[in-house]
Amino acid sequence: MWMMLLCCVVASAQSMTVKVTVTNDWKEDKTNEPVVVKFSDMKKVNFEVKSVTVKCKGKDVPCQLDDMDGNGRPDEVFFLADIKDKDTKTFEVKLSAKEQGAKGKEQEDRIYTALQLRDKQDKHPDVLRVEAPGKSNIFNDIYMHGITLESDVVGYRIYFDHRQNIDLYGKKHRRIELPVTQFYTSEEQLAEGYGVDVLWAGDAIGCGSFKDWKKGQPENWTEVGVRGQRVVTTGPLRTIVEVYDLGVKEEDDLLYDMHQYYTLYAGHRDMQVEVQFTPSSGKKPFEKKFFCTGVQKVGETADEATRKGHKSQGFVKKEGLAASWGCDYPDMGKKQQWAPEAVGLAVYVPKEYISDTKEDKLNYLFVVQPDKKHCLRYHVSFCADKEDEGYHTAKDWFASLDDWKDQVNHPVTVKVE
Image 1 (cartoon, rainbow, N blue to C red):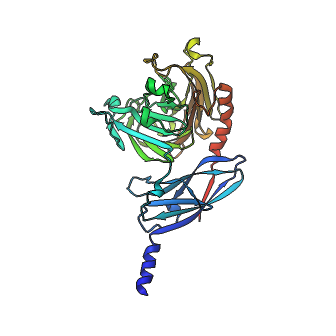
Image 2: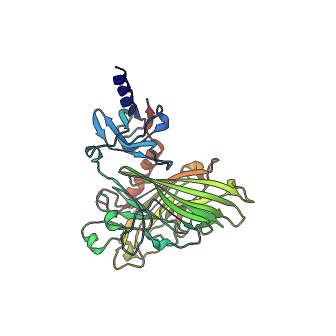
């Protein structure tokens, strides 16, 4: 009898099921809405979690386990939910000490993340972190020139150099493509319907790149002690990557560390950016430090033939939206290989971070300041005219952005019982 009771206790200690209610208080339906369930919001998990299942009304919901603090053990469950306006759904989340069987692992990868090295054998090995002295130029030693994120809608990459520009990959079909094209789409792949790099930033800010603000203009991150990139967590539904600069030095001897976190969800074209600062020392108070982000004026310097009828246009508003639309070559050095691409760009910055708005010959800009905790957040998004399911005119793209901003500002409410 005692042995049977002991077995039951041990068995029950190897799994835990919690009820999670997700409420959409907003006036519109939510699709592919991110839901995060933190272990810290549950009762103490007293076993090593190796798998998770999520169900809603008895049906399996695709999900993933994420290790956010990098200690080798998961601490969050993530899944996506479709919820109608003013509605609530209940999910059962089961954590288990057992590995899932083959059947439990059968779910579509709707996210791709890569940080790869360029090697002599052209195998491009995957790594989780790359770190180098700030003066080292290893831009060409990183395959795809930086860390890469892709959802089934769009793709991004962040350059591993002093620019840290966000580059864009647009595609015709909603699917994962970067494992095949690696951002360098061949003529044969283009003929087969694959997407391609769709933006040339040059000296502009691109789409939501984060820059220093000096002497009334954006500046790259040149005075850096150490720069690095790492994969925090990835797929099949969410990826988070980190871009960091340690020992950023200003002319007035202000010294600080900067960590940028980029989050991309399956089914989404927009990407969340969170920037955290750790001030170290300096004569100038960090609270008076300014930075900037925004969107470039796409096709502003292009001729009429290159623009293909797409007028370069855009705006920046104090309410937090900056956007542009235009058409230009995505690679000025390979005009014969890649034709001009029409794209729409957008950045949404909450008003509490905005110090000023600016417009110069290349960009629509926000001058921003971190909050009292030395942190700021914003969102970037883009569309490519080549998409089957997307936007094809400036009018339609601009008209969609207020709704996007409202979507961002009205996340679902998650309650764990």
